[in-house]
Image (cartoon, rainbow, N blue to C red; front, side, top):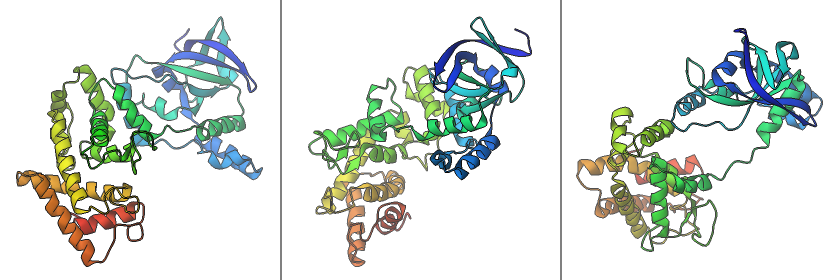
Length: 376
């Protein structure tokens, strides 16, 4: 191999589309030679759309890089257990490639390889990210742009996303107590305790089962709690610190900077006061369940569904600050808040139904403004 080439081991694979090569290559080498061919794929998609090809409307087309996603990936690849087990797919002209004795050599020049799938993953190794990181790569030779567009569209329109509540439930197996796992544990406790206002009301796997006839999913329930703990875009950073520190959360206060005004549960989390987080939430939900006896947990009302829950959690952020200032986040403190909210609804002759508070952001924020006029 010369300095003008990158070289790596490959195996040929033959499928109906033809023969391509699967190999293992240094991330830094692949980053040097690969680009996402946004314009050519777009042109190909236009041509397919004109011919009535149903795939063309999904082309993407190669989507422009999302800087936020690239930064998240860049944080992730630096973590102690980072892994990309799925392949980056590229197309290369055969004039730039030599294959012999199970090795592939590609000319080391920018844009020699066109990325069909995996542009965000590969971009995570840019900006001088120096890592000893191998990637699986699938290489197609002399692939027509039309075929590249078709393959891109097929890959990116046929994925079946995992149920987000199932993803949350899989945190049960996490070895470190990330905010996501803490929120999962809290949801599980609320759903399983017979005296809890959420007893069997949280669909832990996103659907009704023998443990829950619920009216709210675990994903919805935990997301709002996480949003009171930290900025989840820092998930990979937080998890990596915990993994390296054997789960000791005290290291987070030194290395992660979180605005506690925006995330009032952060300090409780760092101090491993999960019990305090649960107790505050329990006081809050019990107060509303006792004041809104008819509406709480009833499928005809929205209070303990996504719309009402979202409004309650929007209000809680300011209430925590107020309660900490008054040294009281007690059941009585929250019950006073709930009673005032009930009186305002009665004055306006509004019921907690989708007629007055429709599903979605509009209904959530409308209810929030009525229940918490001093914070909205």
